[in-house]
Length: 357
View 1 (spheres, rainbow, N blue to C red):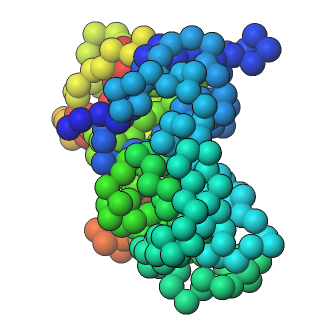
View 2: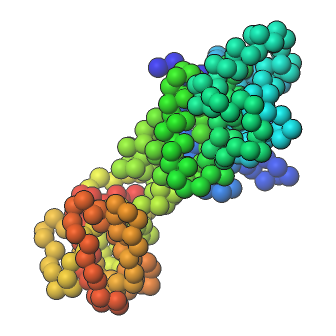
View 3: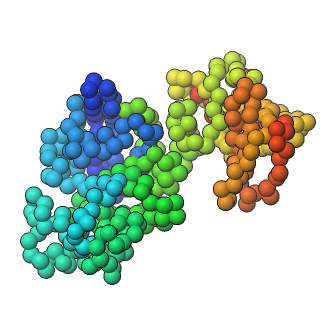
């Protein structure tokens, strides 16, 4: 697959504090790419550097094979959809979308018939037909999102950057807009780079997910591999679906604050030793239940359960005081009532654990 964007050792600091610390990444053409990271990891800075709103302190940015580090934003062929949509309240939906075409510095479109045809086509593409003359103050959040996207897409960029595009929408609308954004991207055949702090959003949206940690790309892979095989304990922590123990590997065991955990699965070099087990890989059993030879067993006291529709997340305190989480999918088993502060065995297969060394 050909690439549309290459980042080579890109650095950026503000007042001497590094925001990007040597970014290396290659983004595929005609793909949906999620950029995931916690607050302060450098996500928005990276987006602004790619767009040209910020100048990198070092490194190279190649777009469609050409260096663009010093090219002004409006000449890069890269669209940007802002988190707050940045729509003009005094203009209609159609006028907002036409604005970029009519006022761009390079090749503005001045023929009203051409503008009208292009706007009509893009309005149909993003599902806004019938709202052309509506003021942007009279449409919903999801419709504003589509207007902001249409205003970018109508200029036919080769790549679109989306800064937390679903952050201002309510939960139900976020879910619906996920599939709509993917459908729109596929119809346009351009690369979307979608920045988010939500691990579920990143995994659901991206053909490829880039994980940004303290100004560096910590992992770049498909969503399934990222979920099952995070490259480090930090990446696993961002995914918010792993119980993680610090400690050291000693022979065939991992010495942790809750005791020795038998090893069995693969080990990954990451620099910082850690032991991780995914929430949905753990079984909850009576306290007197013994573990099989291929299992690991610890004990915890039940605190509370939280229903999320298709699953129940149960929380336990371990002997060292930490909270341990278990996710049980209701399609697999009927919900179980646990005794508050009751002791239970928490059991998982050895090979299901991830060990970082």
